[in-house]
Amino acid sequence: MSPEQLFGELLGFGLSWRVAECVFSRAEGRVDLQVENTEEFWKMERCPRRGGLPKAYDHTDEVHWNDLHVMQFRCQITARLPRGRCELCNHTWRFRSPWEGKAEGSARISKPLLCF
Image 1: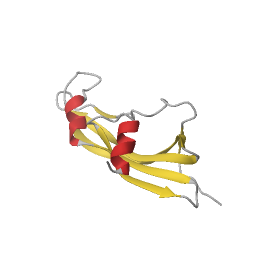
Image 2: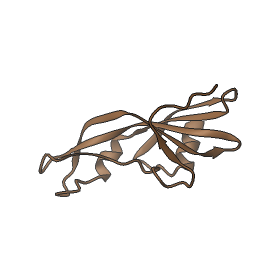
Image 3: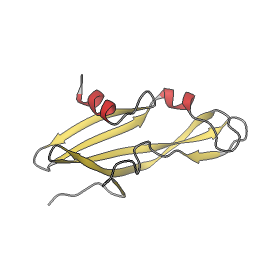
C-alpha cells in the first residue's frame, strides 16, 4: 500500500476523494497531503436546492488545513475544493471538504505553513 493510499484510508475518503501526493519533510517536521476529488465524487453528490446531479464547474484556489499530528510530525492537507452546477436549476455552489472541522485541533489556514 502506498503512503497516498494509506492516508486516504486513515482519513476515510472512500471513493469520492483521494490523496494525490504525500510529501514527508523531516527537516520541517511536517507531512503534506495534496488531496483531490475523484470522478466518483460527482455521482454521489446532489444539488442542495433541487436535488439534481451536479456537473463539475470549477475548483477553488488552494485551501490549507492543519490536521492532527502524524506520529510527532505536523500534518497539513491542501486541496482545491470542487464547485458544481446543478443540471436541473443551474445553481452553482462550493462543496465542503469531508475532513473540515472533524478532528479536534484541526484548523483551516489561508496560507501554507512557513517554517523558520
